[in-house]
Length: 456
Image 1: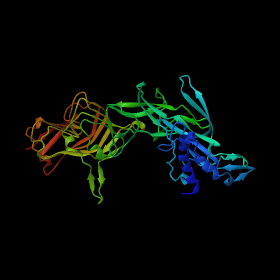
Image 2 (image 1 turned 90 degrees about the vertical axis):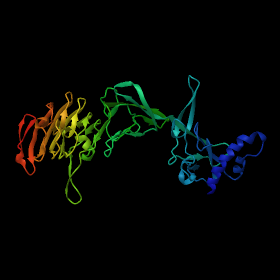
Image 3 (image 1 turned 120 degrees about the vertical axis):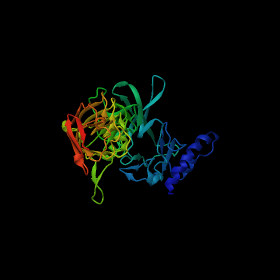
Image 4 (image 1 turned 90 degrees about the horizontal axis):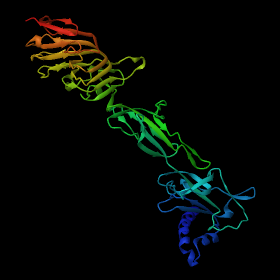
């Protein structure tokens, strides 16, 4: 530890000692430093904060004769309390105060008594530790116990973001404190999970974040990865301008996830709400170059969809495309509605989607039980289901080995086995009889209905 640093640390202790023993008439440590030639002292006042765990004031001392002379005066380059090179630890004398942000060190502080009796301060002459110099009379009579300069830590209440719903701009949802000139991260969607990360933004029950505005009318939409606080800091007098920034959140009803990959789409929940963000292709090549297809879960093929599946808005308004989906009713399956979804409920929504090059396979033995409904989109679609701007295209493959107990009780439709196909364009769906004996089954298409005949 160099000599100057030893003096700095000892004087911190000495200051406390002076306050305790001055009335006893004992010689203070300041006298010792004066005798050693260190008569010049500079005081740093935390001004309501702290500089270490138990110190609100530190003092640096200098020897007048060791300071350089410029234009006939002695000059000292002061040491920032947070200077790591000199202090050894950048956090050792870092000023802190609960609920406030540190602005800087100021040479002048003016006290003001507020109407409520509280004391406030105004500041001037912010000290620049790189450019400013302390000027001293080389012939002056100085004492270490009388600082030639006191620098005051200036504080301002922390800046804050206040969050409101654009539907209720008067009710505060959350307040979040930050330092001056800070930014907060905008909510973003995790493409791996499809879930939204809200960061410091508040979550609203049964709502999903859409966007944020700086005005309650929803005219100034904020974009980008971060939101920068609009308040400013006046360094000349250490005051804050517009320290509170209000943000207004727009939401959509329900808890939603985003879909970015075919694999994610193939594992959705039957009661979930989803927005498909981009075109998807279930076909891919493995590392050996072989054709592979992402799977479509069996519980979807035979299950009842009660949620929402919506294609994101695209430039020009074109629907989101989903290609090469493969699914089948396998032998021995004991479900009675088969399709991309077994059933689509009256509460469900499906919008802005174009399914292309799909293949639904009716495999051997799959229809041995009567009262089974098949369809490219769903085995059954209940009345009331909100389906708009949805198209399906591809092939319904019917194996010639399928055993129909009663063909009149097997319902096959291009879009669905039911007659409720409003909002669906199924003109791109065809039927193909495949297997070793294709002439065993013949069919005609009557609207959406596929009428089968078994030729035994």
